[in-house]
Length: 147
Image (cartoon, rainbow, N blue to C red; front, side):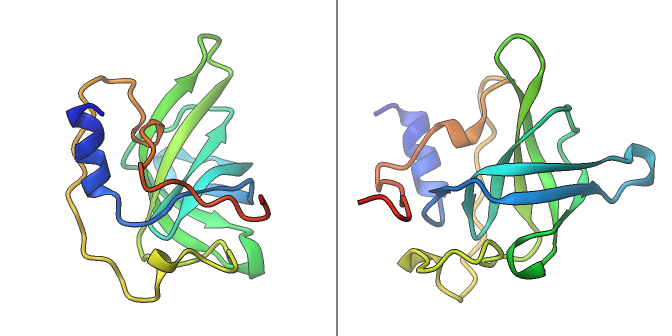
């Protein structure tokens, strides 16, 4: 395993789950207005990865709306990289302002507990187009419903 994977491993606070959950992403910045319905790719209590049909600027404040159970949550864009070379879709990382199981995953992994995890500094990727979610944990992933 490379040293960069090890640094991501130490920064990971909870298990990621591959899940396609419908969500609407709405910009909270009047200068960059958009609203798009999409699906998550991966989720955890700190945020998610989604696929959008447009690029969005990292740091942009957004509202995740139409979540399971009628929930909504404030978040910010952490990364945005193109999928493929056509520029048709973008893989977007999103960090929640408040940690929680807003995805209504049941049963949730044990490390998703109700106590907030201490904030950890996530290293900046060395390559401009490297997406942090592309490095998966050696702890494994949870696959609800898979036997």
